[in-house]
Image 1 (spheres, one colour):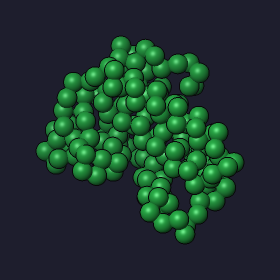
Image 2 (cartoon, rainbow, N blue to C red):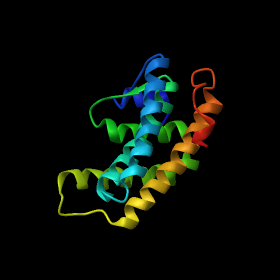
Image 3 (cartoon, rainbow, N blue to C red):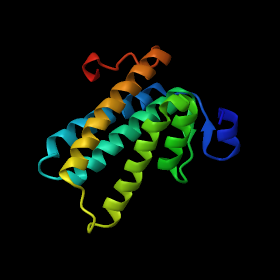
Image 4 (tube, one colour):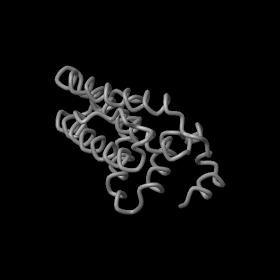
Length: 155
């Protein structure tokens, strides 16, 4: 799907990148990754959910830097669809994993009778670190003029 199709289908809208917003989201994603690490042993479910949201925010940073904004209706799902359109089929399996995490996080938040295992939470954190590093590399490569603040420590 190309950008015009995303806009036509009501998944995204075009808008100029806002440097302050992009940097703020990027910083928040990194903070969430740290929070997930810090609570991993005390609350597996929220560590999983926070890892997912850190990944989601980083995907949104890419989208905003590209000059798009996901529509609020089904925003979480739309972020994944738009990211796939930007990144292409080479990232399909990675974004499918993000979508599975989206559904698992929604189930966790809505229904506490489905606990998240220690393995799931540890894997989510590992996946989040890898995803964020990979997305930051892509953002740095494609939008270095916008995101000079992506620190080398996120590599």
